[in-house]
Image 1 (tube, helix red, strand yellow):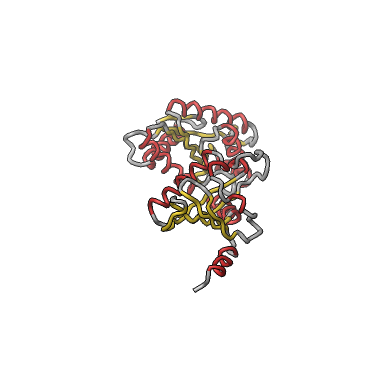
Image 2: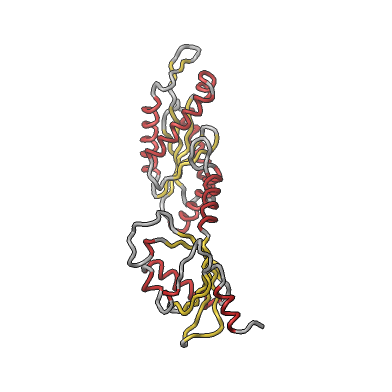
Length: 306
């Protein structure tokens, strides 16, 4: 068995800081934090309360997490961020990126000053979090356009469909593709088709709301999720996008058919709204696809709602 002096030395040598924190958020003791790449001396925290140091929203999260650990008696593992904006008395200026931590929180079976205590080990995971974020972005992004890909679309559709079922807010879908893309590829080459696809992706990013989710569904087909828009509002949005594309691409790729009829690149759009009768988001997506087909069959470069 280690004597008290050696145990104290072991605790002091821990690379990650280990806090003993009371139920009310008082820093009772601090051990470790010897990895100087990430941590500074935190001894000045002893005796202070989280609520005195951290702004209310984040402080309330810390206190609630401590309470969960004390109630469950199980080890909690939580990822969280801290930045200058979370700390009282610091200017908002400073590092633009927050510091990410993994907290391991466990209730201890003794009290200090008649108050329940948790042990909170905080590990700096900022580098890991940045890598995970970058990999996630790459897996969710279409390489040609920089838009979200089909994989991300499926997650977004699932989320918004479930939110519609729970909360009842409107969610509309827009599906569109390029008119005469095959003719463009055959006449000017596939690079011209790719340029047109990228141009339309850029127009979408500039024409839609930040809350709208634009995805390349595959080939020249796109799907846009429009949260909080009903069918009439989504149809107006679709028409505005159609006009923006038509004006931006007018005469960009002058083409002629064998009969010497000029062809301009445009988009055909199908629009629908998720309804209470839909058992899944796939039903709404199929409805938008059928509306797109009707827009194509009706002469292209138009919006059809369903």
